[in-house]
Length: 365
Image 1 (cartoon, helix red, strand yellow):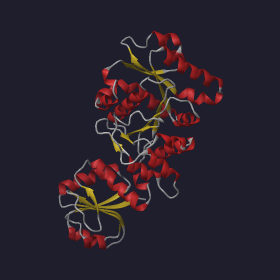
Image 2 (cartoon, helix red, strand yellow):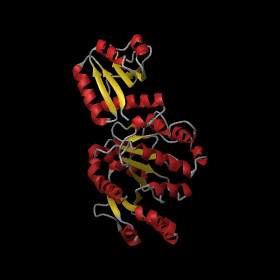
Image 3 (cartoon, helix red, strand yellow):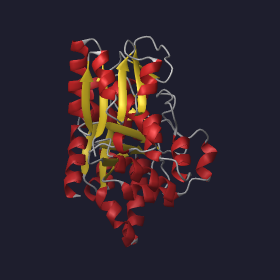
């Protein structure tokens, strides 16, 4: 069912731009717009509406008392407080304003229906049994490239020791909040997800800060991690979900890898890196239950020379065992995670093969 929403503002040009965007991006809204306060007050006598969002020149205690609305919002230029209304900053990115309004409604009603999207979320996991291969740098790079290519992208770091917390600013909520919501009866985890994420201002992707304490992972079970990824996909708010994983091969890691559409395995031209990946593949070949994981794996050669993969990698036989969907050259850009975030559209051609691989994996599903 559509949600009834009223938008009211005396600025006709502003209201037209806002309403056109809302109708395009949120077809679940039945929108009514007003520039005249008296006409709005008469309309409100008709009965219940879901969302009332009015400019501060319209909002007053009398309207708040008369309006039968699930959520009453004042679009304020100065964050002024008006009795009976929640204040929302009027002049911000239109996408952010729409998201904030829908989140306020979801929180007021306890239902995430209004904030649920319609995307078919594709999940890419970054995993390598070898440390130091640039796994997190590449995961951030793909997140930024995916966002730059127009995909609504969420990056989630599930390393037991988060290696990107210093590169990304703290979000309104954390993974700790999401795990608690998933375990708490009556709490809507989808609403908590929407309230917890932030958009990286330069990289363009969305993310949520990691757990508040490393010790929490002692109490987090594999089923909790699976429920987290399932909830994110069911919200259908993101086109792409990128999951950054630790280097171990525990039951938790296996369960997470099972959730991915494609598994990117970063490797460098070092004997130990290739040897660890080969050892893992040998173990997986012994046990048939790992075959589905093996089939989703794709190598990403990192820090390659201008000639491509080096001698160690070629002699290891690894390139014959797994498909290779990306060869990333040695560059100063990838030496620091913060540099990746500032790279902008330069990342799109670098990561285009990986974006193509994700698209292909989605079709196979």
